[in-house]
Length: 116
Image (cartoon, rainbow, N blue to C red; front, side):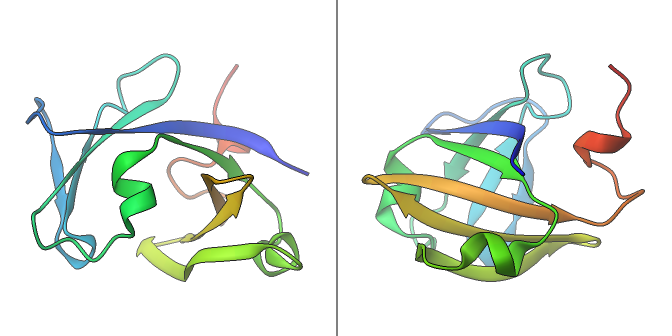
């Protein structure tokens, strides 16, 4: 089952409240304050992230089982842990990047733990 988590939009502009993720060579901002969960992503010149992620917006979905969600899909970025309690991977769907996230219950950012 897929649950909408956020929309990631690449930008070249520095934004207030950016958080640097050195292992991915990127800065992220906005997710915590956007009512629509829009995450802005600004990439370092030497970022190891694929060009598709750096240039095309992506939609992210929370899944219960990341390994099962990846079965039969074209994996763009292998599963990794960008923060404690969170495993993510990117796939390509019809030429677009899609982020799949498995978030441990009780971890910040889990869609099933947030009030409606």
